[in-house]
Image (cartoon, rainbow, N blue to C red; front, side):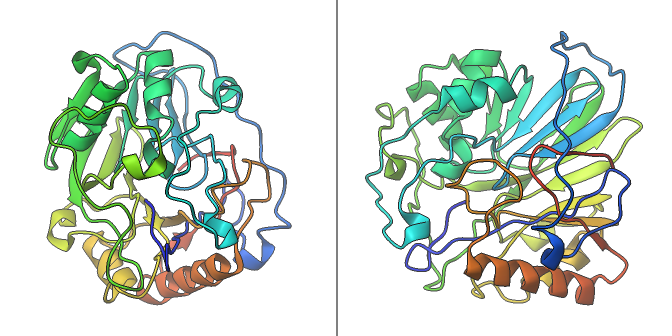
Amino acid sequence: MFDERSYDRRRFLRDAATGAAAVSTAGLAAAAPARAATTTAAAAGTGRSGAVSFRWWGTSGWRIDIGNRTVLVDPYLSRYDTGLFRGAFDEETPLTVRTTVIDPLVDRAENILVTHTHWDHFNDVPYIAERTGARVVGTLTAYHLGLAHGLPSGQLAPVKGGEVLDFGAYTVEVVGSLHSRNGAWSMAFPGVRVSRPPKPEKISDLPEGDTLAYQIRVDGGPSVFFMGASDFAERNLVGLAPDVAMVASAASTSTADYVPRLMAALDHPKVVVPVHWDNFETPLTNPPTVAPNDRRRLDDLIAAVRKASPRSRVLVPEYHTAYHF
């Protein structure tokens, strides 16, 4: 998700734990070094063997390994400079795919779940899909943008919300959602693509394109809810009741009672992992870089979750570290 203040930003946070105690935001910079991700490039089957792990790739990006199968959510690894975090945002910034960053991290993927098509969510998706053969699940805009990048239609799965997709070892429930609002109750690059456009060249060629959320239910494992933007359609969340919720840090105060309504709608998840709070134009090295305004939003999010859902555990992550829920 992308927002502005005059191009406001929203942020993300997650709490750590592979069985370790949660750390506070004050301790984020001093947290233990992230455990490097290790994977085995195995052919995907209908079942799973082995543990389930979740690795944060910054912004609202995730790598989920379910045994020998891999699902990605909003994988944005190129993280190039648009001027956004320097107060000099340039909407004409050329789209850039840093293959030397992506290739060592993405050895495989069977599904890529796209919450919306702003560049900090979609930029790397076509390249990763082409490289791995992964199916791209997203809005009709994501479908048309995939075609514009030369992906075959059979590799693109357009969804609207309400679908429950069965992949054997796990299901993916698609949830109709909303993009966050900036301080002017608006957003950057609104709009959709209702037909195949020319191949995008600059970041403003990637509109919001409608917004989705996803819930993954692992057979014999957790149910995990993923947001890519800090707003939601409250009634669409009824009955999801996830074990874990990846919650986008609010870009502004434009959405009324954001955290209390979200926690109630999700039936107070056991674990809350705030997302989209890091500076996504810096490398994926620990500790994550956090702008002062985003640090404040992160602190506010943690405080709001603890007040609205005191039994929920807030987890603060580092990049690449495997979390098991």
